[in-house]
Image (tube, rainbow, N blue to C red; front, side, top):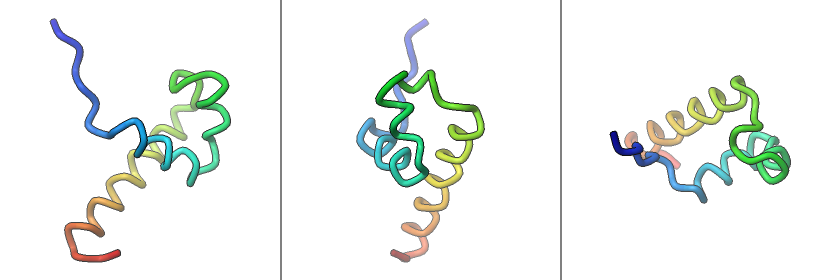
Amino acid sequence: MSRRRGIMSERFKEELAKDLGFYDVVQKEGWGGIKARDAGNMVKRAIELAEQQLAGGK
């Protein structure tokens, strides 16, 4: 079975991590080092941004 490609680009994930305040953990430990709560908040924020974009917002 092939590995699934991520939907979010690496750059976008890094920007979200910076905005949410845990990019330092990503730099030190990689994406596996973040807390589940942080990962959930990152997905939640990405969804909010996508909804804003679809609605013609910012």
